[in-house]
Length: 336
Ligand SMILES: [Zn+2]
Image (cartoon, rainbow, N blue to C red; front, side, top):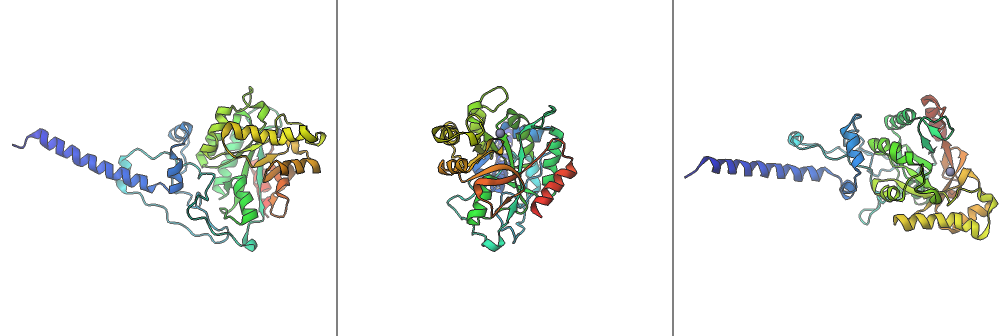
């Protein structure tokens, strides 16, 4: 005898089956690179998208996460979500591609030298906040700057991605820019990361390893989490000295020592360096090279140019008093 509860069980089973099918479909929408990093998504990313400002829609930036020849852009069709997908909770934001886009499968073809990008702005920030101090950029200004980058089609990349484009022709997205933060201040975690995650922008933090865990500085625990969230760590010495005044073991300790500490504590390879206050000498650069760094940034104003020594890349300082117009002009001048 067919009873009501049999029907109810049957209906339940059908609904479950449909939900499972949708769930599988939903997972399949996640690109491979995203799937690999979904597990590492930070809780704050979800909180940010659930709260006030809406995160950009998935698929709204087809170039992002894809690796395209800078000069031969092909529009990949965005995945079409089935109408019934709205029954399911929205997927977590697909954060930034992994730092190793060149996995074992499908290495992208090299861009021939004549078609490579020659000038890429590397933006330099320190602290974010309202203190009347030259190191600080106001939070609302930083937000406006990141919105400007997004709306103007700039596509932030990492130092490693830039280095590999210049040296190997590894493809870069169009309109690349690198976002860097010097010194490893706590405001990177508290203030910058939620904003950067909203736009899925990677950034590079140059850490003074002797100050990690200090009152205004990132902790080792935070530094260990950042690479999995798509951020890149670089070394900025142990104590932020004037490197021109050091030599021998002391110089090596500041340069190679900061790299070793970061690698030991985070388990990540650290390939990029930042000269404290932009000060260096020929001996400094040699020590940076022999410590195994691939590239290093100065505070000389201008874009990082393909013809520059990668150990002496220029940057563009974002100043507290820059209006959005000035910020935009600095970027435009850099890539002109
Ligand atoms: Zn510094």
